[in-house]
Image 1 (cartoon, rainbow, N blue to C red):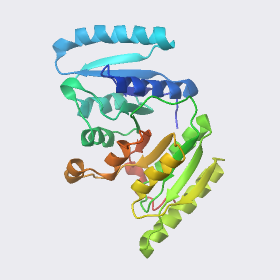
Image 2: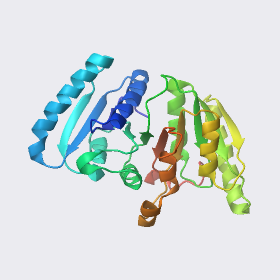
Image 3: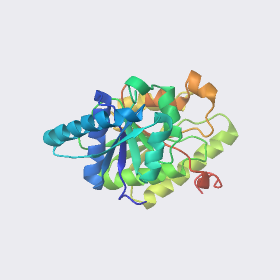
Image 4: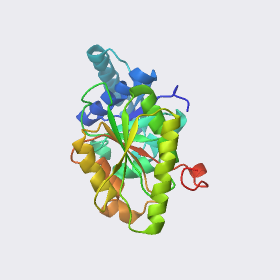
Length: 273
């Protein structure tokens, strides 16, 4: 994985965008990478005024924190241009507030998920400012799906810079087929993390819903991050009624969530093998 790539922040001058920038700086200090703020306007006539406002915000941030991120102002839509910039810049990942961009192109909840799943890069979704510069506990739910291989690569990435402990959480299924797949994924995850000298433990959760129990466990250990993969081919029904990922990224405890989209080139693998 090439780490010499920028972090993208959707920027709307809000407090949530400021939280996202604070998290970006937390990563950038460790990785030594650039930060690019993206502000999207509705009309090209708004670009000049928005650019002046961005310049002022950047200077204020430099004076306050000693860091000067880059920025881009574009006419467009949040549903296409965030991910277009990610692609153009070959960004490492994006960080954004749960409520995203307010004002002219406000989106919340399911619309945030729509932006996230359209990206080739992961998103880290935040709801509050980082509590510290460290990252001690990362929760890593494991289910029966075979789309988790890339999540392990990102676990290695996070451990490389933060030395966090990973908590592999699962719920034992009563279905023998699902049970076999979950067991296989746990075994392979353990092998991978062990081979990379990553600190981890395996936690069997009680209950029926992995996402719900993961959130309860994450609160209990004061987790710094939850890592999930998004559902492939998510439907309009999920957008309207709320996919599990949507509930996770908008969790009441305001725990940051890293969402990783399954890569098409990994679908030929079964499990992590």
